[in-house]
Image (cartoon, rainbow, N blue to C red):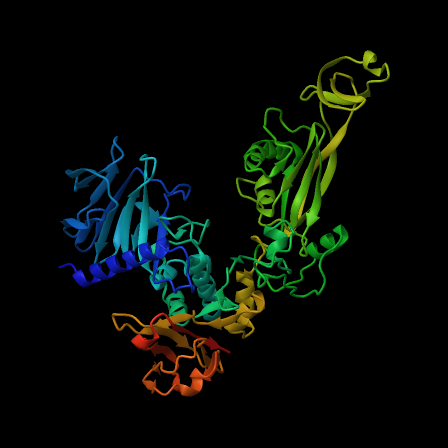
Length: 590
């Protein structure tokens, strides 16, 4: 029999999410109790679906959210097929028998057991998800979204082992758990879901990828976040550092200093200076300096034949041009011919290229942004591991005039143009015109290009291989996070205590590890000098708060009241006399 308490709990959480998302101003960053995940197709290239099958080992309850009514209880083991019809509405069949037609939805599917999507594979088996599945028709009525709604910890259990190998060990996994928790806490992709299940957000495979080691890492970091000035950081991470990481501004903000992410600063692992010249770049990336030397992508090479690379650029540059990342825009109407040089124009402190020039005989194109640069030079349909590289051209090759037209520049103010046979102008400049020519001139071009580089990913924030290697030296997850994210502290999220009609207390649960932290401080902001706000730390009650009330901000060492493992701090609601006033608290770890 279906557990109605569980269903009502999830419906309550769903309502809570809808109410929170509709609010225009947040006083505090709330701890995310529920995560909404957009589920993609098998190829991870779309979140729009035409049909889906859902089954479970227990009863499935189907709810029409718009009408707030249960419309069906599906017996365990039966397969529900939901398809979008020609009118842009849902039809529902159960074991191939049509049961409902023309439902506008959204539809909600819940069960005491996991919900399985038989036609969608994750980790080699049919996808299974904790929580609930919501189906919502898109605005154009041509498809629908599949949204997995579940609690935060269950979501993290489906993310962490996919973002970091469990073989990296507990401390590295704990650092990853907090980074992933911070990411989903600060993320909001659309009005319908917070994150998606692909690398666009974080890789999420649902219950299929749960692992006892990573599950334990999540449990042992419960309630703990990385904060900067009491606000959860955007905890960017990537696979492998090349030996130097980068400032967020240099990689994502064209080098313009914004101070939006002051905690995402360059980290020098074995050197103390930025790479300022091309010689510095070549010297650094032909050496092995850094923490992540055991990563297969710490140093790498990719080689292209010239004709191969011309064909690759002919395919990649139009797409990047449409995104505004190539100047001048490359339409693809004329193939790149006579590729001569790939020239870095802007580099970051780590030597990452954020702007480069592609020089060919029939044009020059500037490519901007590190991700676009990596996509421009795909090899076997895979983008470059990073934009930290230098390029060396090898050999010389004569470009046969039987394959490609030649062109030369002539001076319009001389009679040279009358001495050659030409077809059409390519580009005009003052006093000159570039012409296709059929002269028997011989021109040599590089035969191949070799890219030598290091690292894997955007290179901002935490290196996952770096976390692994630091953990092997005995560093705790707190030390790892504080190395990669400058000026942060590890803390619970701030919570608000005020008067409410329901006598609801404010409770914070967190895992305290005495091997990691020496001290836990309860930080209380009491700017209105409220004199009475009783609270508890585990079973210890604190009812006399006059000494705390005299301060706008108080710090109370609560370490001796904590146990190894899960702990609770609970504030009772304020009395009615304090209606409209509040205090704010959090627990900070050192």
